[in-house]
Length: 82
View 1 (tube, rainbow, N blue to C red):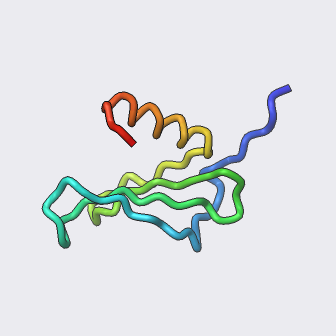
View 2 (cartoon, rainbow, N blue to C red; view 1 turned 90 degrees about the horizontal axis):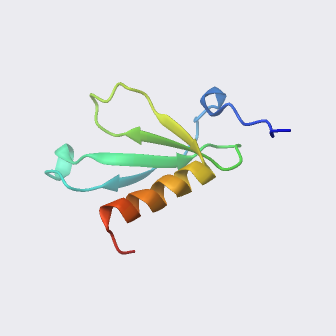
View 3 (cartoon, helix red, strand yellow; view 1 turned 180 degrees about the vertical axis):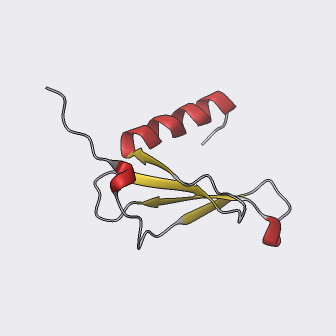
């Protein structure tokens, strides 16, 4: 039997404390950032959003294992050293 998964998009992000990961742009008011926060009250659930005012596409939500897999593959594919 498959364990029931959380409906990540059914969870409220009210009160989420976002961390901004910025860089690669002009800085100041024009700096572009990706913001990430744990979803309050959820187990291993995260929300990712764009900080730009024109970013109207909503947010993306991931489980902890999904975020970890993405991060590891991103680092590996980009040839980054951490």
